Length: 352
Ligand code: GDD
Ligand code: MN
Image 1 (cartoon, rainbow, N blue to C red):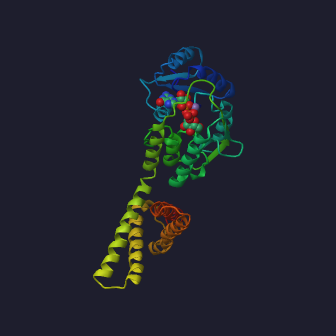
Image 2: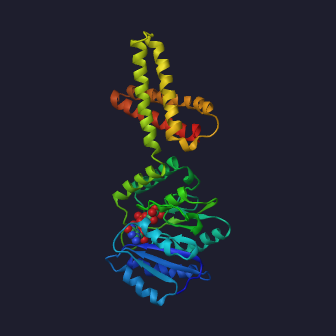
Image 3: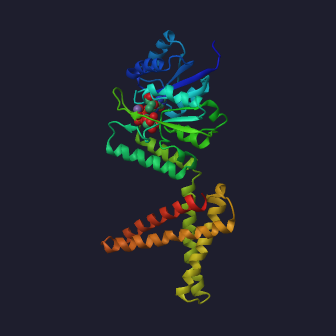
């Protein structure tokens, strides 16, 4: 048995890719000529016989291995099962369906040699792009990247953190515990891995010539769950804190007016301030507890800028009313805008 360390292990997850996999393997061998590499296909018992096909091929082709799994267990876990047996110093992940141009692998690997820890093939840098996607799928993809950038700090340096095509030093993920649900393993590597330098190379995501995409609606749900988990449920905590602030605001207003006979006009100034302090303390000790830096009072003062939220809420509300929008709908939209402004302010200014 060969146990030597290779330079590069290429992992190809497959589910019903019989018409593509042979050609892809040829192209990879062609473009990595001169390197010491291995190819690991991870097949989930594809009904179209991809697994047997690659098994046969592996008797003829050096350094080609197949992992057979009992059934369709998901893309991310397939990739990780491949990584587990990979002997390379670096690992590359590429789709089997020829949508990721294998000619780029060599350039990506050479960047590892230049000292980068992760190299991502990106659709969203200059020179990159997407061929043949519907407008809807483009919007979904853009929104998904936007949310990743919004919620996950460490992936902000990468313009395409949802790419399925990347190379990394195996050390980057040593000791990392993965969720491994769904499609987006790169996102988890970027959030949890140990690395300093990331590079992106542009590529055009080609349209599929054979077979079908396995992307299903429930992958969107998997993605949202993963985002929530990786961001430590920050948005949900922020919403909860916001709601507690509403209770504090209304409750203290009622107390001041009814028990202390404060004038209504001035009472609101105090009750708003109470709710700001309430929200600040809860967010500081809970929502953003891992992001506290510098002085507590300085953060508290900065957090007062989040009063911007209610202001925006009101402006949007008034504006929509003028255009004849129903007042409840107008307020609901106002609340959402105010909330987003508030969150952005907290995320990027107070607890940066
Ligand atoms: N073993 C295994 N198990 N392989 C799978 C599974 C699975 O459950 N699901 C999908 N695959 C394989 C496919 O056979 C293909 O080789 C690859 O994973 C990608 O699946 P597609 O169904 O073709 O995905 P896509 O084209 O919609 O999206 C891809 O490209 C995007 C852009 O880079 C994925 O790589 C996305 O993660 C990526 O964002
Ligand atoms: Mn595909």
